[in-house]
Image 1 (cartoon, rainbow, N blue to C red):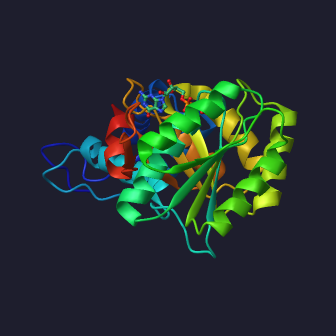
Image 2 (cartoon, rainbow, N blue to C red):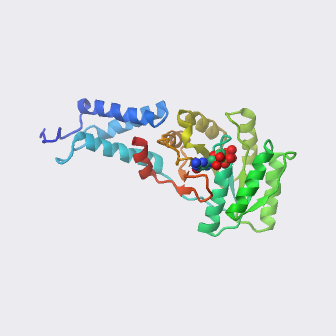
Image 3 (cartoon, rainbow, N blue to C red):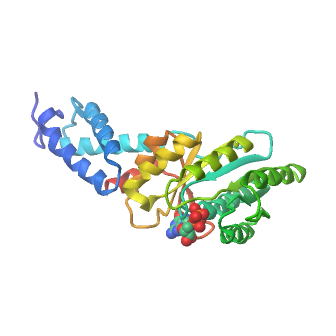
Length: 285
Ligand code: GDP
């Protein structure tokens, strides 16, 4: 084997161990869940062993590039924008824990759909437990330039959804976004309710909204929502915070759904199409 000035010409079992340990630490510090870290490291190791090292590079540099590519590939597959390919109104169901950012994201998506895709958008809240959440949706929908469909705490979520759908059809809306109740933790009654909403509405998009600051716990939330619903996409919120956003990796791996958008502020225009390459750099720190 030709030795170069900068190190070995190939990545070998012996020189990869220390480097992988560092990558592992970086991922754990970024709050990627442990089982996800293990799988990831195993994939990178397989890819790295025997990889050629150009004379101008060190094995470390080559490994970092393999890690970065693998991270971006893991987080970045899939379609980025919303799928609206269905008989209108296209229904988008918002799912996630309380405080994850569902209502805020509903307004951001409303704005996105109106401005970028020239759609007529109706929103409705099926959160019958928190009247304030219904009011919040009314306010932010107005800010976004969409129309809000009224609902009350006395109604059943399914009836709210059906009434909104009927209104959307009669008034030729292109998109109906249904905001749902969240809890502070996973709860079987809540899951049954959102499963029922899903069965009633047959949405073209079922988006899992998850707080990037949730860290290690994101994996449990993601698992529970994936078991309850056929998720079609993820919105990772609060990426303007100081977390390294390792939740992206965990949630993507557990759900298999593409990360479509990132929330980057509390404001209505604080939504970006998720950029896996850029995010890979952030996760690695
Ligand atoms: P919901 O309970 O899931 O509907 O969550 P909300 O939409 O009410 O959001 C909870 C809190 O998180 C609110 O204070 C929002 O302003 C805030 N929030 C939502 N998305 C973002 C984001 O991308 N960045 C920041 N900084 N705050 C956000």
